[in-house]
Length: 491
Image (cartoon, rainbow, N blue to C red):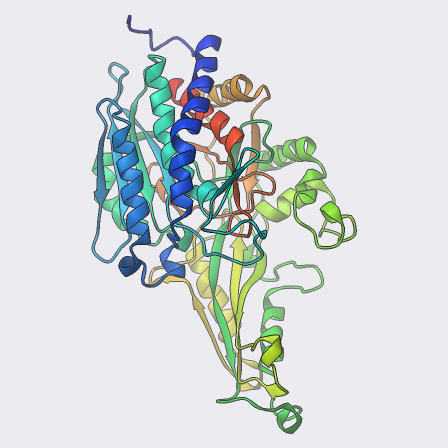
């Protein structure tokens, strides 16, 4: 076969062939591998303190590594890197096929999962995969087990079409759902092996719809932790104690009033807000025009289909996008100290605990926000109650800082749009995401000149972290081909 001129752009027939290859490989190899992966309860360390002894993370790492090595990609080397006491990382390397190329493309994903959650459809479950109508149901397939398989398939597609590429390395972690607190030591250990990173392809993000390629322009940060209010050492008959002993729930509610306006949901401390960059506002307006009411109709409202009776916080698409991407929000994601309804007697409970999830705008420092939140909640407690807030993370790395993408290089902007048109028949969309990928701010600091292609399969109703999570396989196929096409366009 004659060598292809690497300076030529990807031709329409080559782009179509990339799509055909990705489609076939997903059906033949990726869906079966992900079906096995979903069946393993490989929960992140935050949700499985005994992860090492349970061996579930070890199994999905070994399965993924074996699958990658079985593909026999020319020149590929793979290592499972381990640091004692930390979750493992898969590191693979594929040498450049482009003459004189000294740049590196980093492809990122993770294999750890969120916990089960409740409310799964009767015929579904977190660890019982089901493939139905192009949707692969089960925990972790979309967030983010597919990434390593799609990354390797994108490279295979390039090689099948004799399209050259820069050096490619893969970084697949197993601590992302816990805030990636194990990742910095690995980045330090692997820094020289990563090389001159010119492009990061992160496959752990979302999509505004399933009709086009979506590039993530920003990510929120997060502070999570447990707020506990203790009043008594044991429960007391409510008829005897109420009116004298303050309710731990009321005290906790009072503390949250320091943080949030309960009538609007606005976070009160100005330090948890940031200025919206002007270029992001233009992108928000464009994305809002594309998506319209689908921005709020996509959620499973309790009263009426698609929000027919229940009203969202706003029906203005621009405000909805800003609320979920550039403004702080508070969620209570777990409670303790409450008995089940069937066993709840007339007892004044001794304590109340809430698990808090505070989403932060992209430009707010997560560690500093965690310290500020702890002070805000613990100082001057009502009734001198015993109040503690324990943020998740490790000393020196509490909270996760968000991320605002660097300006797109002209070549990448053109390549993204060309790939979206070729694989989806529609232009690329730009959208911020409300979730958190701690790696992105880490890599941005370590490789400030690198371009970032952050994308993913988490589109409408895919419901990562919740019940009935699914991977939209047709979209994943086209995304895989689009990633391959963008890598082929790297200068």
